[in-house]
Length: 306
Image (cartoon, rainbow, N blue to C red):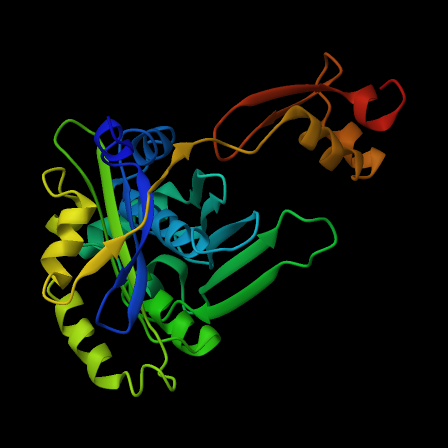
């Protein structure tokens, strides 16, 4: 049984056209990744859709890395949603989390009459989107590019990021929906222009043709369980030929651990830690991503009894 048939929704794969000057990646997420991540915190539907898009975006970007590390799509602001982050690690593990104010969110939903909020409504006029690339190799500094969350959708803001920060012609398409059974499904595709050179010549006409084909994608096609990614790519680019590389399976796996948490707490001032300690002498911490609970003895991070 192939990887695609065993987990038909949870993978990312690179693709390239045999005649058009484009390369890209396609991602599908569902029962092994997106559903458990979003169901864990019972996000409202529209917030779940946007957080899912952030996770799709991190995976589309991160899966193209040539080194071990992780990519975070992080949006922040002072609106009803103060923060959301989707994270992809090169080993295929993904996680996501959002922090929002329920009362302000409920008011926004009421004002919008059930329509999906746009980015300035969610994050306020000073909202910003960051793509953060972190190397696993010690000593390597993270890279971060930031753009305002000024457009209507996360997808449009991300395209601005590629245009301004990376200066790469990029097309993005992402879709996330919850079905009647409560399961979440997501799909996305990223296509980038390959620059012309002596061998290829000018690639502008080919890029315009590829854009026209890409723009025929529908949200339903991106998340359809009936249309596998290879079939979707073939529908788009069959006239010129398209090749999809072997997919990488994705998994819902958090990077939190007691050892990592102890190291973080050990870096805090003892006074602050003692303010947090419970009567039983432990620090009780929940991971914001996976909701795992930790009980850390105070002496384990301060070196002395409370």
